[in-house]
Image (cartoon, rainbow, N blue to C red; front, side, top):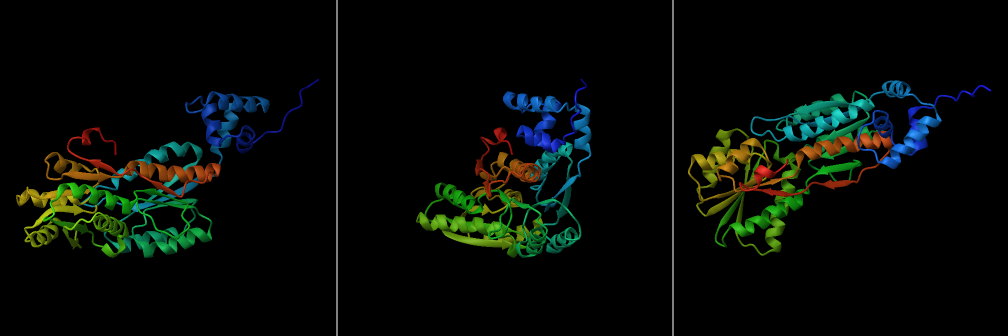
Length: 353
């Protein structure tokens, strides 16, 4: 008697029958690592039961509609290469999800120019996409994009800085307030009671840089809670070119009681350049982010400590969270804080960013 021909079963249905993701079906098909032996046996049994051939699966995977994840982050600036690191994570994730018919649409804006962000937002709201990774540096200007995504049921996640009370699926980045607390704790061991401290923000769009202000809040609360009586001065430098930074620091450091400077972002190398050029070797310097310019001054002991938050992992995990949500309906954790790592001349060669 002729064996009854079974109807073709789609890849999605096979995944359901095996209780795995489509990605797992593909890994078993191509004998890739990362699948437990028990799971692999279950998948192979389902494939055999439905007489599914590898080329059939490959055709099914290739015929899927491509899903598009938009990544909207700042581009590098002449003063800081910070955003190269999250981009590395995004590119790593992109390579992993591309075989499953996912595509990254990378959009870059100038973090020093609000208008460039607005233009990207307006362009996005004229097109279709399936998910969004966003560095929401401009809080007010981000809200129309949130509304657009909410209206069209497009999931979005935040990278590097968070905004409360919106419908993002997840946040990947540092606990900014706790980063400020960590900086203040280290400062406590570096200064004398009579020393004064200079807190430096360097940003053209400071009113939009809420992530820097959260660090400042952490510093102030920690100092108050621990009874630190050192006088704290705040300096806002609204231009990021070195000439402006140099002029601002010359004025601020006419106060010779200042013995420590904390820079709240990755532009600490510009302050280090000033301290080295003006022979201020008696001033301690702390800042953020594992970048080549910062490391160069760390090696020369102009910068004493850097605080780092795994930016490559931020970019990678943000994209992968949307992939798993869109592919497997796996809902990510809402808050995903990165470690607060303290880097010095002694340990930086062993650090993975």
